[in-house]
Length: 466
Image 1 (cartoon, rainbow, N blue to C red):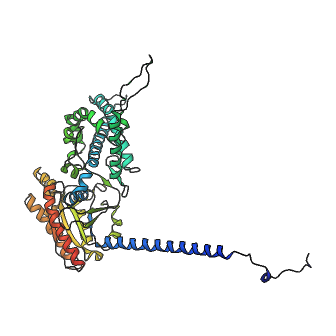
Image 2: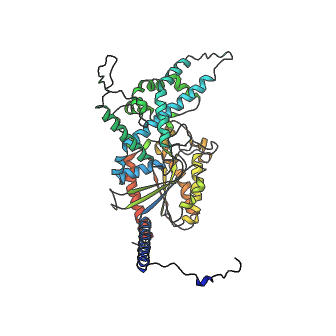
Image 3: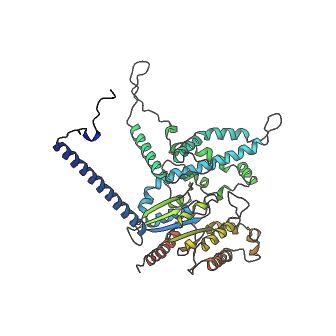
């Protein structure tokens, strides 16, 4: 076989194709390539239009420590300028408020349990007279706690905070709640006309309506909350329970998302949250969340506004820097809570922490052209604190013997923030500040109208449109 002549590769005949088939194939390939190219061009054009539209929109960066009131400012902004969307979310906030109340109950039961378990004698007895009563109340409230736990697993899966309603950014939690509530309503409506037609032991049709187990309501605590109203009221109004909380230094009334004093309204089948209720509702977002509003009331109807809410806890602050690029306006919230410490670090005073953050924002060169608007928030809390006789100089020694009144206290801290603003800003810019209470919707609406005008003027000026 080695002696057989081999055909040179250039002499091997190529397969023959019919010319018609070849042209059709090439024609289809060209058409497909053209179609794909057109789709790519259209996608690029759409992306460019979206990017241009986003750049033309007003962008606001919301800064401040955790629990400074940022989420309440966002809700006030929506109420003032996008009321249609605000109204659509009212029943969503009902669920959040109910969960806030359940979280408060859970905290109280845990504190009572720790308090009374510490009294157990070496022989295993507990002489405290409320031990048996606590067990009864805890048992009666267990269905409510169960529903609350179920709802939290749906809204914020994987979040590990037993005392706060937590959600992850981008989880679309509002739409999820709305969808589940709509489904629950459909089930209620259908249950009124669906009958159980199973036969009883005598062979007769049993046409009784099915009873619906309230625990099947995955996300709506309303039925169980209404049924638990008396037990909750008994627990919260018990003077011995209040004494335990006071001894442990727990001030429930000052905690975000506190609604136990509103139990009579909230534990009602027909409860609909007021605007004030929604402002007080507490949801903790674990990360950076972007809010888009289409303005349908006030100035510049139809314009888009993006508000970026970054996490305020100390661990989240290194993540702020990427959002400094191209930012036009910064709303900085500094709560006037001079007597409180950070939740994540009890050694650091909240107001001192706000001052430290303000210094860093003022001196940042990336933010040199950004408009800074300072909100001295929680003036209502400041007033209550001073009326209770708490002395500022106990927590801020430099305050000295100045009057322990709202006006002088606010002016003192305002002067500190103004000094840093003037001294540290890379370029001259006006110092703008407002005294706010984010839960006061009427005053916030008027204030935000003025702030919106300032923001829009700054935005137009930066865009060389004035």
